[in-house]
Amino acid sequence: MTVEGTIVETVDAFHRGRFHLVQPKGIGHRSGMDAMLLAALVAGEGPMRVADLGAGAGAAGLAVAARIAGAEVLLVERSPLMAAFARKTLALPSNACFAGRAEVLEADVGLSGRARRQAGLADDVFDHVIMNPPFNDRIHCRTPDALKAEAHAMDDDLFERWIRTAGAIMRPGGQLSLIARPQSVAAIVDACGRRFGALEITPLHARAGEIALRILVTGIKGSRGGLALRMPIVMHEDGLHAFTPFVNALNNGLAAYPRLPRP
Amino acid sequence: MTVEGTIVETVDAFHRGRFHLVQPKGIGHRSGMDAMLLAALVAGEGPMRVADLGAGAGAAGLAVAARIAGAEVLLVERSPLMAAFARKTLALPSNACFAGRAEVLEADVGLSGRARRQAGLADDVFDHVIMNPPFNDRIHCRTPDALKAEAHAMDDDLFERWIRTAGAIMRPGGQLSLIARPQSVAAIVDACGRRFGALEITPLHARAGEIALRILVTGIKGSRGGLALRMPIVMHEDGLHAFTPFVNALNNGLAAYPRLPRP
Image 1 (spheres, rainbow over the protein chains, first blue to last red):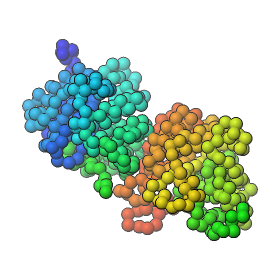
Image 2 (image 1 turned 120 degrees about the vertical axis):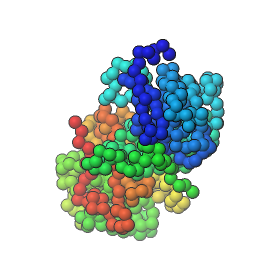
Image 3 (image 1 turned 60 degrees about the vertical axis):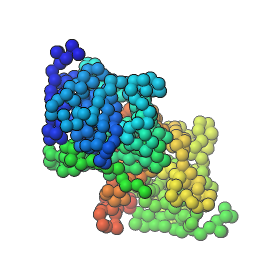
Image 4 (image 1 turned 90 degrees about the horizontal axis):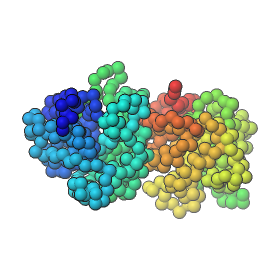
């Protein structure tokens, strides 16, 4: 990656320093809260195989690997630049305790059928698939930065293609987890279609009284269960800058946000 | 309606006795909380023209007429039996103060084009369209009662047809309001499509910590505004049987639940 000489990179701590991420500065999508909340949707102890689709530098997938000792994680990223950062991240000494359970696959999540399998995404193997799909934030998309545009170029068809891949590579009964904008709720539910059931949607609000910034969505491959709309998660208590203790725990890998008990 | 001799009917008070509803007992859909919350989505003072699609005995539409002195309400109902109950409701002396502003139209909401107009639903005339579409509640649909089955027979196509009609009969800038199950969120958003924008979705929970029982949805005809997922309304405080003061006010016609201020 000769281009790297021209890119300023940062090493950012997550989970109170229990793992670090090498990220380009000023270009591409920088991971943060969204990735940590997405990772919190994976509950249980493992062993489990987890695929992070559109992994970027690996934030969400590695947050799962750092919290769950039995998790083996595949970071799937199309951009050679971001995949290179994911590999750099895995090479950091401070990530050594889980780097052996993580791998980077440079592949386009939108591929299907034989092309997908040939790219390294086999059928019916993962227990969990997580994704934080890129979206087109109309307010903030004024930048000409091509890499950021790619990470934020979102449309309904993208959910259809990404969730189709998630359904294909997951074992029956496996769990899809994603974080997205509320505006995408119909595209997500439609794409889950008959592939995923027992959907659970949790709105995420910065503060009580404000509209939701994100939705957290999980579903089970092949389930015929109905959709459940859960109580929202509110990140900040009124008048306080800090996260609530629960959100802080999710953000720092100290707790998962499990699915509802079902009969 | 010779059949009426065989049907037990009740007269039920709403809005703390400010209006009454004649309903069949033991058959058909009996109106209650859902209809009152739906009516609360219509804010403002009037004058305004309001259509209640699938009005049944008229609960939601008459709750609007009872609260908003300037509202003229058309109750649209396909079932001759339920339309007859709506007419009986309007004839009650206790409803005299707004009965002059309400009318019953026996018509199928699912009609389109010329058939719809010929049935009495003209283009571009209403300021508000409200609907509490029938749904198929899998837990409670064990009854062989045909009328209840009709009121609860719901599918995605029904939202498409009903919202198409709502879009056709409403003036540009008019407001769609509906109450539905969370399971229908994608069908509703898809049906709103380019007809309605600036959608607002509010989950309704019986108690904090439980999953949502309903969603309240509003949208504006022709708007290009984005979808907003609002904070939920919780009906009961922990451990209490009574409604919260806010829900009590909505249920009794003492307050509306207005849309968000938008630029």
